[in-house]
Amino acid sequence: MMAGGVESWSSSSAEGEAKLGMASSKALRVQDSSEETMEDMNGDSFQKVKQRFKDRTMKVAQTKEMLSKQAVQTKEILSKQAVKFAKQ
Image 1 (spheres, rainbow, N blue to C red):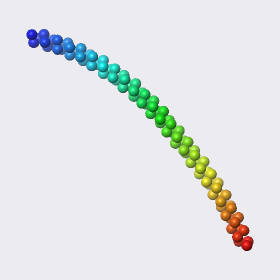
Image 2 (image 1 turned 45 degrees about the horizontal axis):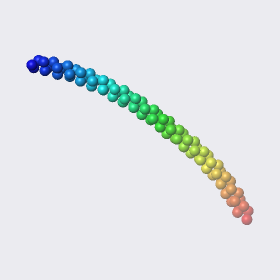
Image 3 (image 1 turned 60 degrees about the vertical axis):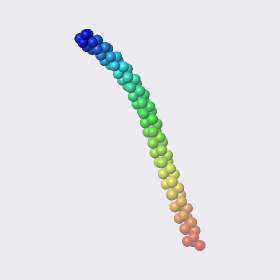
Image 4 (image 1 turned 180 degrees about the horizontal axis):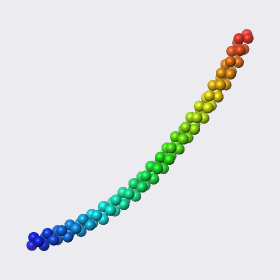
């Protein structure tokens, strides 16, 4: 009686392990595909962030150039006014 019980337990245990193995492989496939999706999303968001930094860098460079030109113009205007005041 014990021997029969042990055999049936071990065969059902083997079936359970096989089912568990199949379930875990399915879970791994689902996990792999979700990780790929996350990598794609992270890749897309990384590209968006990278583009945003690139755009900001360009805008900063343009602003810096504009302010530099304004500074030169302001110096020229101030020196012209200083000459006018000196003549008076």
